[in-house]
Image (cartoon, helix red, strand yellow):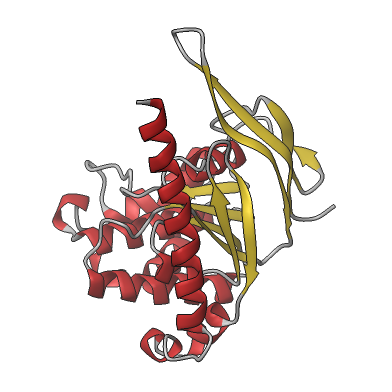
Length: 268
């Protein structure tokens, strides 16, 4: 089967005092190649845990992840990760960072060079390829991280709050870039975010997760990501269903947060 399959994933963390925390329980979903999914939920709902399991950084205590028909048993180039902070190599140039993956796979400059330069042009950094990472702004560093991920040609791109540290204007520009890259490359993308607006704009599928244990609470199929490929995102936000869905999800998450606070007060 082609695509990504999350099959009854559960994750329990054992504590030093003998207790445990059930971070995820029986999470299941399938993603077809080329789908763009955002994941949203209150703190502690297991969003990042789920992403780390899909990436192969964590082994689940139950269930399995299947990628193109085989079981995921660890990190692999077929699944690329973009972190909240770029996790770039400060001592390398922009171009050297983007070329790192192909070089580690043993490819020669003649094999990867043209593609690296093309990706830097696509993310708007063609004039900055010889700059050091520390010379770049936060938004530019995230562009490098995106290009570096794409240089490995993964089937799935996993994004863990990649735009959370950016200012509002830069974040909006990066949201547009993510949509452009999604449509042009046809990659499957899973994006974790705490922003309801971002989840609406960057998810043709949007999952709202509930905590303790982490599980899928509700799934939406939305038109806004497709609209945002060709339209200004500010215009997309004027869509008649945008604010209605936004308020519905905000209320949903607010109720979850209230429930969590109530549990905390009861156990205090």
